[in-house]
Image (cartoon, rainbow, N blue to C red; front, side, top):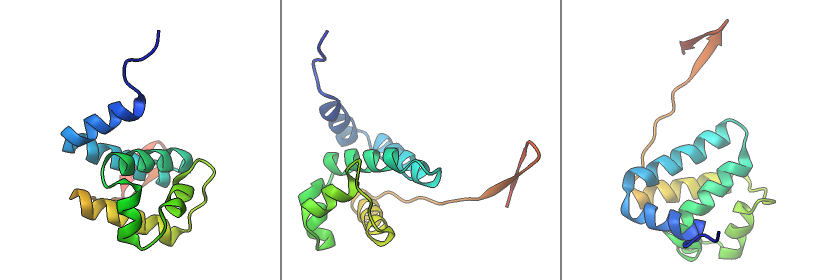
Length: 114
């Protein structure tokens, strides 16, 4: 049975109407990067860019070509850390998203705040 809407259209519509979903999508992307799952992190950032500022808008803001940003966030892309953080900063600025990282460590089976 074919879907009535594409995945991209569904995500875009939800991101446009739900700021909490937009922030959750961003949180998931950052969490994926921090856990070493760069493929998921890039895919989520790509969805967020497509649904908000767009690749052309992001390219203009970062003074880079949109093709370069597409390549960075492509499944086979390997962005430099500086470029990735520029993308993250632009998204947070444009979408009014702020986040705070906290750290902890595990002692035995117990998680202990740092």
